[in-house]
Length: 340
Ligand code: NAD
Image (cartoon, rainbow, N blue to C red; front, side, top):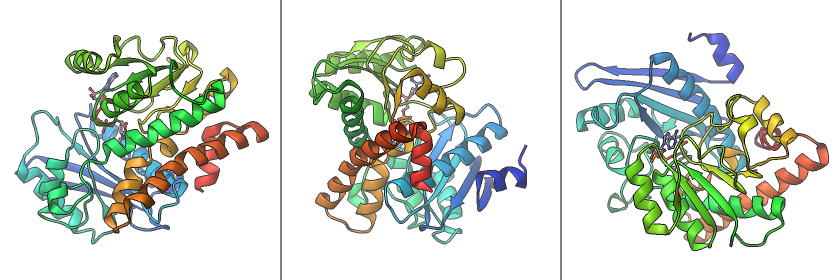
């Protein structure tokens, strides 16, 4: 149930519900913290089981964005939006334009972008109603899809994690499993196979898995097996809470380093990973590449500046891993300290 107590506990400033019966829009925007700047975060469209589930998701995701921007050294706050509905059947121009008009009514306190279930095309409709959107098509002067940049940042983070845990200077011959082959996962698979890693992949969409396995020479695996199969690096690139009470004792990896948001179901799972000797690259640190790209592009920074900031993901992870070892605290907690 929605309570102010919950907002105080998680630190949110504002939660706004947008509804429009004629287009079927049911959206929630959560603005977590604007201390560093306007709240930037994508819009997720998902067929949530109920409204409570959507609210919990947007509260968790928006808080993650505050930490992500802070840890990446960006002058941005954290926010996120969810649209309740099936992205395969319930999208329309009217729905995204109405959403854009509502975002506009927040006067720039919240800046949106694409996320799971939404695309650059959807953001084009949002842009018709508000300038407070990034990730719009390049033809409109926008940054385009940030996902390849997210995937590139994840690759950088996987390299840093592998160096730390396995002492390897390259990914050649390193086994990596990728869960989720959407915007981020599909690019990551390409980058990993280009680096000669041994890659196993799974998506709940079997056609996608088969197509990418054939295209990049990866091994197709069942989505039921991907989380717990024996591997060097497990790269979650699907939905959140993949590290939970059910999966944690069955993990057979040395490193967890992937693009998904909110990988730990609860904070205590970060401690459990440390006890198991699994090196965890905190999600909002390793997956900041898209945010770095979109926000720096938005203010006209050069490609060189963006590349240098993205490379910093590896340096931040090095710092986190070193502190986690020297202070004997989980990497997830070190990341939170740095962000705060
Ligand atoms: P997407 O919707 O394009 O892809 C997600 C994929 O995961 C889909 O193909 C879906 O079928 C698959 N999937 C869902 N549940 C699964 C399961 N149980 N097993 C296997 N596959 C499953 O989304 P995306 O943009 O690629 O984002 C993926 C993750 O990365 C999300 O958690 C997102 O919040 C996070 N993220 C994305 C970006 C970005 O730039 N797109 C940036 C930062 C973080």
